[in-house]
Length: 186
Ligand SMILES: Cc1cc2nc3c(=O)[nH]c(=O)nc-3n(C[C@H](O)[C@H](O)[C@H](O)COP(=O)(O)O)c2cc1C
Image 1 (cartoon, rainbow, N blue to C red):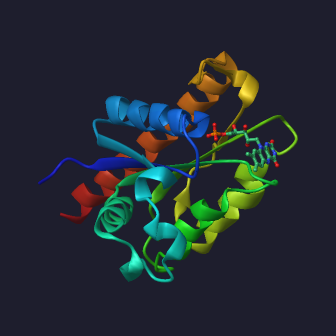
Image 2 (cartoon, helix red, strand yellow):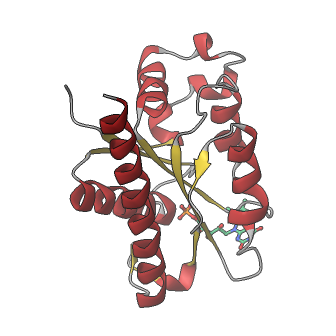
């Protein structure tokens, strides 16, 4: 049986990206602490076919491969920079291409970055409802970081790192519960 996977997906449309760095940090932390294989992608990795795709089948091969990894992940970490009070348009478009039932029950850790505190509730008011639509298992702790929490593109704020660690603990609770359920069913 292959190792369970955690996949990070970031909605940044430019690089270097604080959001991608943050998503990658959280994804790696989950991998290290809970023994999963990790990969992180962003909208840049998906490439130009995303903008013109009307259906998932319109994506080119590399983009379809990323989508397949997102769908197959045991745990997802999503993040987006705040653009005009919400996630980026291409982040939403990526998820618009996904079947409504394809993320049902998947544990998802929600993150976002923004220029300041004003839109900190993007994680609760924008990201959580989106993954609620998918009936995904969005973890209770969602994490928002502002530009001032980063130094040279790396998240340095002790308070935000602590909150991210709390969310990573919750991933452990979900995974332990699921393997207990599997053992009971055997
Ligand atoms: C087009 C655009 C719109 C933005 N809108 C907001 C906003 O509404 N609220 C906010 O807090 N920051 C806003 N920002 C700032 C970014 O969210 C912030 O700098 C973010 O951390 C950038 O992430 P990145 O380094 O991954 O691109 C905006 C930035 C751009 C380029």
